[in-house]
Image (cartoon, rainbow, N blue to C red; front, side, top):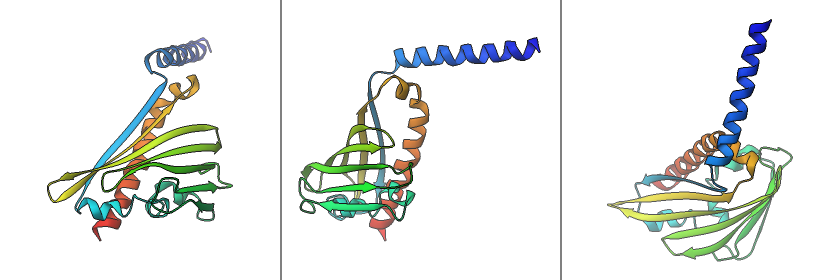
Length: 177
């Protein structure tokens, strides 16, 4: 019995030490990015990132709830192009994403407002750069994190990596076919 209590004590101590180190070591700003080269000219890739409807054709989070309620507003492919989603599935939650900046064939920047399962805000940017006869697509996300999210950062990096990889692969398959 003493051995089990000692092991539990060590585990709890390690978790507390990790939490303290995470809060100190990780800054409040979170940045994630992933890139992929797509065998297509940037003009063709641009068609799939320049509007929210096009983005949602390859958006990895859309599959979380096929019956999710989606409302589009603003002019498609222009600053202010926006969609809001609402799902009963907490993995998808509810929120809005709006285009804040567009540079034709180069960059799309959006702001995301999350309403559920947590309140939050983030910005995302997709940039295109020529890579020979192909296009390098770089997808980023930036947000501020509170102490609890800092502790969960390694898990968040893992989840973001899976989601961004899936999304960029979806985009690649869509553009290269």
